[in-house]
Image 1 (cartoon, helix red, strand yellow):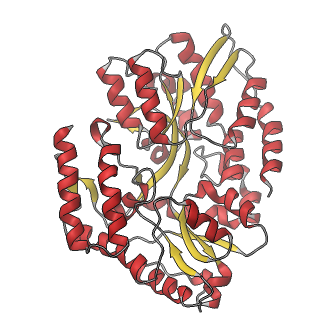
Image 2 (spheres, rainbow, N blue to C red):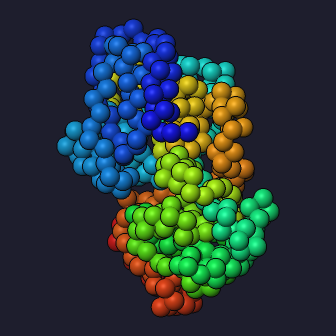
Image 3 (tube, rainbow, N blue to C red):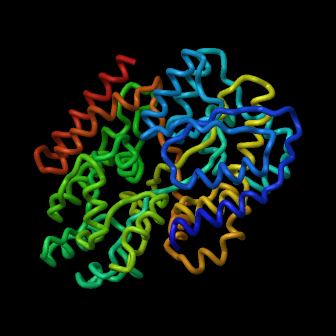
Length: 423
């Protein structure tokens, strides 16, 4: 389905959503990262809620940049009224709000809607992704878990079968190695674990091994053990045993996949529409579950984002709640899912998407992994960026074969311990 057609349909659908807001006109500032599908959604809200004006701020390049901008805004009383934060950012931002005496959860607003309304729209497991200390400080807008995007033709040429795809890393690595041997510049897999602007990829490996990012005291890594060492070994094996090129950015791998030169890449379901559009009819792409290192104990960090209401003004909070309800409504969630690939966060959306999912099976894969979904780990005291700046280069060297897993572990241990001690 072409993206421009999805957006056109979205604008028509969302404009028909009725408004129950009858207070005085209110203007809200809204801040988010770059999301191509946001324009028709906001257009629909404007038409359905003429009493609420949304001033969209210039989008942030990524979550980290957005978070830092919001924190600076809090310090100068210029934070946006509503912010679309990543799940990993919510605890950090709530911590800053608490320090300033401005932390007001959404529990009271949820409570006014009633338990029946809440249960009819949101599953408890989804709401938990945006809770801090048991309180609802944000409302989930999108949800995702990592997937393997697979070139069906290359898998079959190497003797594999996408319908019987390996469900272990050993099996995936073995298949990727066979794909790499096809020649003609073809690579079996591209998954540079240190190549993101945050540690989502690395959390997949650690949590997938059944470990935790930090120890219970929050003084150092929680994976300084055999399971953590196995996560490091798998991270290195996928590169060394397949001849994988290691990148400091995911874009080169994406372009090579689009060109049919890579057998499989790791991506969020939110990139599904963009990938299908870029690939066109050059080859058939399939999505499959991301394998766990430990099938019994492992889990996967849920990506995506949630709507935080930062304003303390009563009238603005009331208007912002109408905006939040609209953004998480079945109609909006259905259009977001079709325009991106994200899993909808409103339970009523699944029925609205039945025919769409039947025609687009790649969009259903993420649901098969929801039984292992875990909250994206949030480092205390806004330490995520400092932790990742030291961890990413170590993982890069690991995948390039410059250091062994045994060498990498103390480096990771010392760096993270140093950051946590300094915070």
